[in-house]
Length: 357
Ligand code: F6P
Image 1 (cartoon, rainbow, N blue to C red):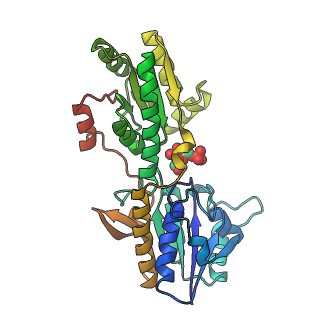
Image 2: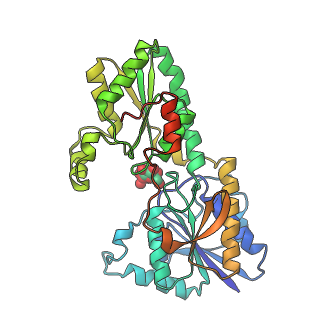
């Protein structure tokens, strides 16, 4: 008998179901006596023992379905060692629920925070396989995370739609793309959507340079400008602040997000209208793209293979276009950020895109 647990944690994305399906099919095609338990709503289900036995029919017809059939929630890593309101030791509770079900392995799908807890559970002696999920693409040790390509398409669509209306009205438009700490999604959607200015957390901007880029376009006869701005875009000045000071500043800000602050500043300096569009959580919704379906099927299959070989403690990653097992201890707690002088940034600058730096 092989007993496997699964959980999806953190912000959802389009391809979680596709990835779970890959693992489940990889296991059921090779093991007769198999039980798969889905812990409900992320680590919460593992902590409080909320789970359900999943049958093969649960994994049928979900390749194209967004969201997650077992639910998700955010359980911050930094609070995992803090007892809950009833004094429950969460880590001990997770271990007990794993042992109670006599699991051979726990498959954990999630982003950076989820991965840190997965690694902690590995250190605590559980058999763990992690699959790298996030639209942010910021997991260190894998070329790509699932959800990223699907989200690029949605954010690109948003920029495409703005393009036609921006051109009609001769306005400056900002499209705010998800990503607080890293700008991969903004960079790719910005390039794919033909944004004129791209502002990223990794490349602090100078508002005067941003305004200059808009003026340069006007002088060249272009009536409109589109900015792709990451949720975590930051000015050079603010980048000088400590994390704590910046958090405080944001908490006091009258603007709902950085894009509105940037819009106000541009508008004040140019005396013209600036409009902001925030596609928000639409970027995590809908069906996974064909790319993500293939990626998840491959990562899931390799996850199943590792379980069949009893080879645990890995993130299943894509490295140089090959699926690889990367030790969790080498990657947990590390972020994959854009290097400001990365080739893709240089390419973008070469064709005239401004990063406001
Ligand atoms: O899961 C990643 C992400 O979508 C980020 O891009 C975004 O900043 C954040 O989650 C939003 O979180 P929430 O869904 O909790 O509002």
